Image (cartoon, rainbow, N blue to C red; front, side):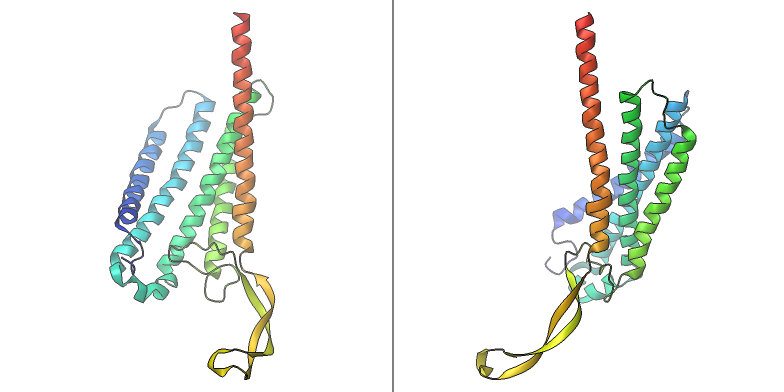
Length: 249
């Protein structure tokens, strides 16, 4: 097992189960939403948003099945072909899909939360997310998510300033790359103690992780805070309404 892409049988089986479940489950959700007959604009908007979220989650299933198939193909000889796998177009495709679906899911969850927040906290307010504005926003989300997944994947490689592809085709490094070196004479010790050698020592660095940090600790953190604060406010709003209705009775 030590030479496999998936390090144990539990992880291997889980990847297949989750991948197939994501594909089948989200296809079912999309099919139901397409056939569903909505009687109001609000239901149509909710159905549209949930359908888009299901499509983004469907991509997660593709990503997981790609990794599972690679594990099955290379089996216990993966360590021999690890460099070939990481530089392959299939791994780059999986990297693109993973970031694409992840960001699309985050954005759609945030959009759904904002829509629910407006409906619950300001039910009689003038500002509403109309169907046309939701569809325009959804189109923008797909374009932005596509670009976020595509740009670093095209740059992936040994000399990439974005990140190298990992075994699971996701680059999340927290490292810095040397940008220049200086030559220093040092005693390396050991059997050659007392002798000095000229060794290259990095003296300037550039971050190789800024793109990943900007996405996962920037964009996604903001989305998480929006969702978190929105649901906390909705919870408080509903609780106050319940207390008010009990007192009037």
